Length: 76
Image (cartoon, rainbow, N blue to C red):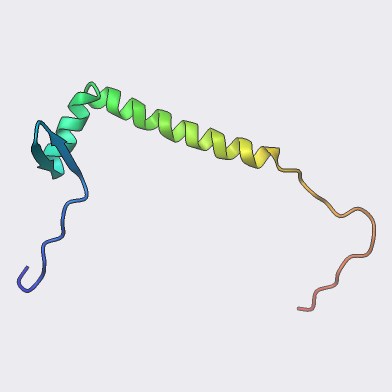
């Protein structure tokens, strides 16, 4: 990686005035969530909630259809 700047890690965790980055920060966060199983359950719950919310918003929109009138002819 000569002549290239090192990209900063986007994952930073500060605990007790100590700065953790990268994998160390990820492991501490997962440990605070109760382990991998609890962490992944939380992620899955967030995904399901986001999906349900967007699905319900789409279901509330009325489906409009043309009734009667003339149809447009498109040229191919």
